[in-house]
Image 1 (cartoon, rainbow, N blue to C red):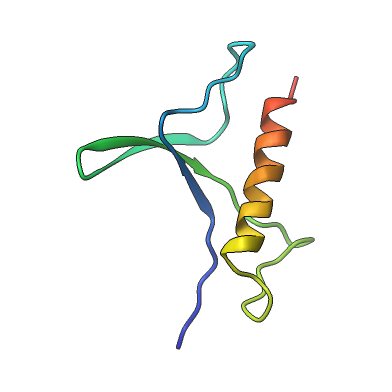
Image 2 (image 1 turned 30 degrees about the vertical axis):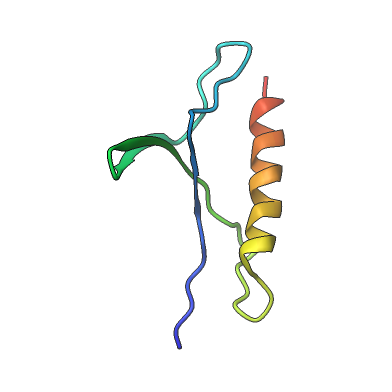
Length: 74
């Protein structure tokens, strides 16, 4: 079995910053007539994907970090 990392997150409804600033690296994708906001986020060399350790749960921990980072960015 071959594994691959998860490097996207999808939101519906779209996430907006309260201060009106743009969120980086966004696109939209329509799935079954619903348009989702798609965030492209990737792991770094300092935090590489490990198929022996990483799961949907560890990906959601990253999503939480991405949200906190983006929504507090000045």
